[in-house]
Length: 129
Image 1: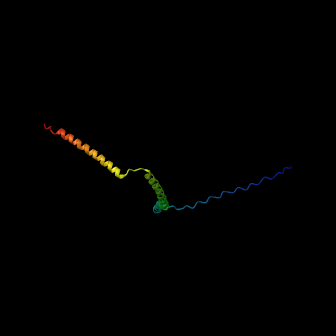
Image 2: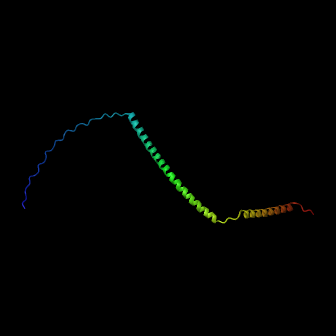
């Protein structure tokens, strides 16, 4: 294989740096009024974004509210039926028997109080002798 000598590539002539053009100077005059308006617009933008988020949340909750109420109502019906079954299983004494027991206990207490009063009277009254 024969090696061919290649001529070295010519370098491109160096470009002379173009003199930099002076940037057009903007006249930046400070305007208190414009700055104040920008600040107010930013502030109102923040408030507006917050109001938008609150409104969106409210709308979402209102839409979900109907579904939640239905779910809660279904759960309430289910719980109510479970409680009714449990209360039906509990044996409750008849009302009349409860009233009779209370009257009997009250009568016993009344007899005991009358007996205690008689004992106190006997001790306080001098013996008639």
